[in-house]
Length: 114
Image (cartoon, rainbow, N blue to C red):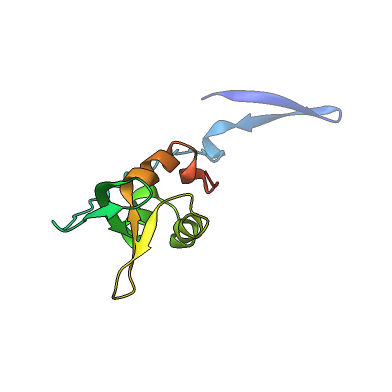
């Protein structure tokens, strides 16, 4: 049995280690991974007036999920003409993927404008 003497004032008192509480610490590390799969229908090819070519277009919600930013940010970029977009006859906003990819190189993912 291990005993230690501790000086307290003038007297030394032995400490019995079998009555001491053992403290154990456990570290937990949590890793998460996320995979987003976008399934596009066949009719996503439209003519982009700004690119002057036929390119793929995505709806606002899908592009926001793909770029991992808010729909509000994508709408702002489309409104300020930093990414190309057009509105369909039924009122949906479609965004040109080519212009979004060009813009994503300029930190669109960090909530900054291009």
